[in-house]
Length: 608
Image (cartoon, rainbow, N blue to C red; front, side, top):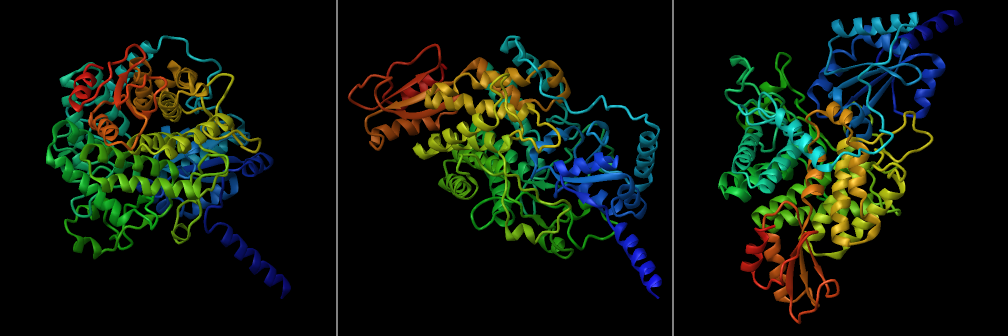
């Protein structure tokens, strides 16, 4: 009898062990286990609002044969790319989902992008197992690049021009975007910002027309029922898209970055055209954010998933989103929201609302940005001055997640860099010195924990002995950090921030890295443009910042569109005390006479 009970228990254990993939977290312990057991490592990187990720989870990682192979021969690691943006960036070449295979020692041997069904995933697993047993696995030549050992020494103008060409080569004039269908609302925001900046720098009407056309293409991503922007949509007449597929949206995912980039696109177009259709488009994105994506503290959730719980078995998610009314959609349920709140993504929305405020002048958008930023400072700012990427919440604990929510207790570069830029933008919009103070705290923490003082550049995650794979210096995140430190030095004039931006760019922007990143170099291009064209500083010099004349001058400066503008108040000292409020407009090479009227400010600003 005891033997029967034991046999039954072993059978139950066997069934349980193959019921699901034994997913592990990214940790030194997990990697050590793989090495000790001499097992290959599978890393599954994705995010909650990813259509292909959900499809692979439903069809492949639930397949008994796949489960058996993975649990017997692999250590399987699941990573949420938004909770761990450092790991997400490392494997972003294969997004999403990115499926990456490593040797037991952590050396990458193979990686693939997108979902695979069991019939074409299982042969890959068998092949990797057989090669490991035969000792014939080779290092993947496309493995993520490591930090370069020495800074780039070529002229910044050459680097800038190469980046311009690289981004221009990827542009598709037929679809008015950087892909065959048009724009990717998640990734093309920085490319569009760079296009508007170049149009301004070069005073090029053709470039400006192209930029406005791209903003127009962003309107194709809008959901006419609930508002908000999809990741991508098919532009009518797009090349290389079959006629029968024209009715379908390309990627119907509503990620938070889609919304921030769409808001920026519409705000920039409105500033240049004053066309009310862009104001209406802004309202549509704002409606979605208010109704679906905001918590009680005014912060924004990460994603809305692509499918409702009642999606018919023979439907694709696109079929659901093509339903043209609220009633039709709700008949099948509502796609769930990923309730995680991420610092870097919230900084994106804060910046986009500030862009909208600059374009429309409506206080409600400024107030939304302020409310979210103030709550992040209260809840996510550590005593050392850096921000946690995310924290626990009851809402997240109630979600059915594909991947566990990782809580990182070290500073992540992307969160600090984006929030640093947001703090400086808030400082300029409000003239409230608390935001400059927060910026300095953040910068000092970044220099202490993330900056490489020998070579330059910032690590994606603060280095730590327990990290299983050494962190690297991601190109675009470093470019954002460079933008932050460039503006911070101009606004603060404090010497410890001087030169950080250029040293950072030179530390990461080698030609092999730029070639590897391809068209995903727009933030780097923006930093190169800033460093070569340099800032334009609008300074209101006054003994009383509350004086109406001071505030009128400041508002005049705020109202002017100038992509390289930094604006602030300053007491007499660096500039002379003229007995009344005045504005100076300066760059590193020249400075205006004291300006006392809006008309003078507008006239002189146009010459910089």
